[in-house]
Amino acid sequence: MTRNAKIDEAALKIDVRPPAVILCEPQLGENIGTAARAMANFGLTDLRIVNPRDGWPSEKARAAASRADHVIDNVKVFDSVEAAIADLHFVFATTARSREVSKPVRGPDEAAVTVTGYGRQGLGTGYLFGRERWGLNNEEVALADEIVTLPVDPQFASLNIAQAVLVCAYEWRVKASGGALPFRLDEETNPPAPKEDVFRFFEHLESALDEINFFRPPEKRPSMVLNLRNIFQKANLTEQEVRSLRGVIAAFERRPTRPHKSAGEAVDECEPNEQETGEE
Amino acid sequence: MTRNAKIDEAALKIDVRPPAVILCEPQLGENIGTAARAMANFGLTDLRIVNPRDGWPSEKARAAASRADHVIDNVKVFDSVEAAIADLHFVFATTARSREVSKPVRGPDEAAVTVTGYGRQGLGTGYLFGRERWGLNNEEVALADEIVTLPVDPQFASLNIAQAVLVCAYEWRVKASGGALPFRLDEETNPPAPKEDVFRFFEHLESALDEINFFRPPEKRPSMVLNLRNIFQKANLTEQEVRSLRGVIAAFERRPTRPHKSAGEAVDECEPNEQETGEE
Image (cartoon, rainbow over all chains, first blue to last red; front, side, top):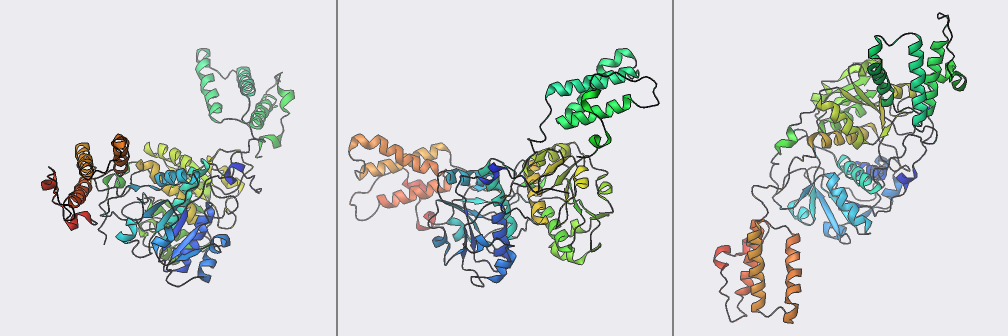
């Protein structure tokens, strides 16, 4: 029913140094694992952990990572936030609450612009995440350059760590890849039709409708034609779709209840049949 | 250590009809629950389920929703995708794979622009999500207007449903709220200083440095002054920070190892003390 993705090459090649993710004193191995998986989804691999409560390595983390083993195997453990970010050049602290610290507060999209900018120069950046229960303390936030927070509904603001990591990683990839998606419309097999084909389809449709005296009263023909053309313009038809529609019109033209058969010039070229008008 | 968030009013008021989330034949109640929580984080409440495998209501869903009870209580169950989206005007199908269906493929950011546009007119929109194991079939995708896919790393593309819902809901809120965050820098208590104060700080610093013959050789003074000013310009100082820095300079000026005491005009106004230069 589906075929494998034709992977867009642009979605694979990202020449930007990705940020590190630093988890400060995470309590549950599961959360480390789901954070690792979220990182892997968007191409991040540098996971650093400060004083994990239940130690490291963690089988619970590996299981929760759902095969993001390359992230789990690469984890580095530190005994302070200072040590964990020592080699980085710009760090965002993530918080869900307003702080008395006077630092710029950014959304994940703005933060990703900054991180991507430094990453293009090969400089190390990071996102610092706090504990499950109470986040980062003010001294830890003070170690970072700026604050990033998510644009949540203030009345339901509680996200788990993996969700917060996911949104930051997603925004990084959007900015670093210029919005490249793993696939788009398959443009080789489904190009938009050349306008010439679309115009000939319009003329075919309109001549078929003239034949059955559709445009009444005649003075309304121009506006009716415009309206019909607009419908199909909006559909941004492919060549195959133009052929299918011309097949439909030709079939109507030949229907047995009508005695006269149209001598439409295009019937020979569209070779209408049942299959062509169905799903492709 | 932290205080409660001062909630930004703009983050609360969103005058845009939010999209529905439609889950097609979800297998696990937990996934319905985590999807509901992700919706609630970004202000979505209209959750529709087509033929949930384990029936409805689901205690597992409620537990996994982490108090997003307003979403769970509001769930509507349908026996077909057609019925679930009948009242909507524009629907995105989410897929992780290229399709043979000729439909535009959008990123979550592009999709959110469309959904927000219709939502501003009060029109109903929706995101259709497939089964955990194999997503949507081509007939279901064909019921939608366009396809949305996430810009994942093609080599690690597997997201769970709640993660996919989270990113779509996040992008909706970014677009619908104009990027409003729940909090920003507290501008009432931490405004950037007026330039006049910054310039007087510069002059204070430079006269204190002139006093100790810091600028040598004299012909280099102009460029040295520029460099120093740039350092503090980048910091985008608040009024309080300007006062703290002037306290630091005044303290250096008065240090006992130097016999002459500066008669700086600003010393009386900044009242330097230990506390002022510390963390606030």
